[in-house]
Image 1 (cartoon, rainbow, N blue to C red):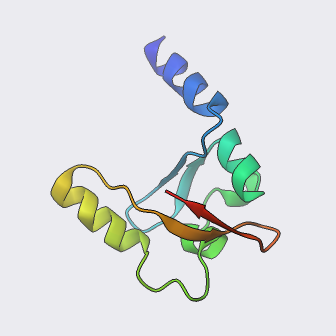
Image 2 (cartoon, rainbow, N blue to C red):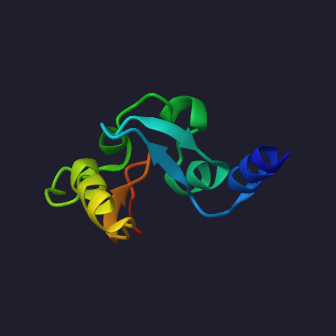
Image 3 (cartoon, rainbow, N blue to C red):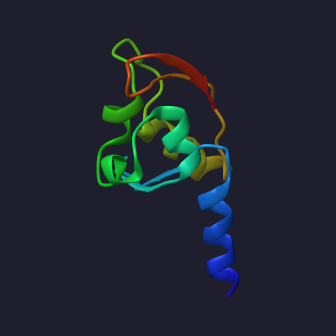
Length: 93
């Protein structure tokens, strides 16, 4: 019951929530992420997150750096310039 409730909350949250493997492969993409980035969950799942929302000039923000920081501190928050499906750029954290 709790697990189903947690998934329902994540699914319906207006914030974009993206969960990746340690290698940056998208394993969860909620409706908020669909709205923000323009990709459906079906389009995003099993793809490299940098391929979906990374920018060509974005050299410091990588999934590996984020995960390294997370493994040391237990949390990682970073603002980054991200690319939407339509090519538009947005700031996200």
